[in-house]
Length: 187
Image 1 (cartoon, rainbow, N blue to C red):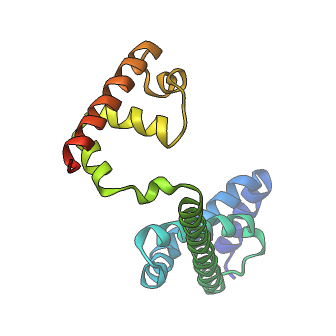
Image 2: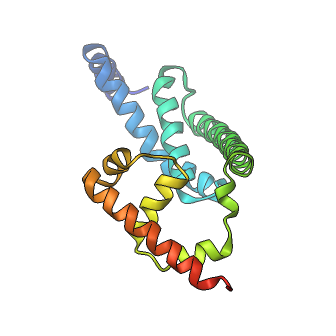
């Protein structure tokens, strides 16, 4: 080893001793610059989409930061990053699988609850046709009354109207709905 090289090595070692955080950041930045394209390419080719690849990339380098002092030197660090990226993809796939399972279970439970407890889901076609002739606001007031069993005062809170306006609209909507239904029925 030349004298010049020894002096350089000593000055680097001295700099590391003076400020170990700077040396740590420098090593991480060098590792990131040297490997980010390879690791990202690896992830893009294997992830379900680009968002998953980006998430796995950030998690991979977060793990590298935490374990930086224990990472192998040289190409060993690059290989370690590939392994960490692989683990992140596996974790993401498991989270996605669990999330899909939970969503499916919740949807099944909602369907079951609706069909068992809310007969309004299977409403008469004539009633729905008649309701479609009412304003959207009158439809909502009638639904909140009949389906959710809310009082005019409660509907006022939900809709932002005054209780008196809700009572008047409810009365008119019921009458209009009744007239529409009677006009459809044969005498």
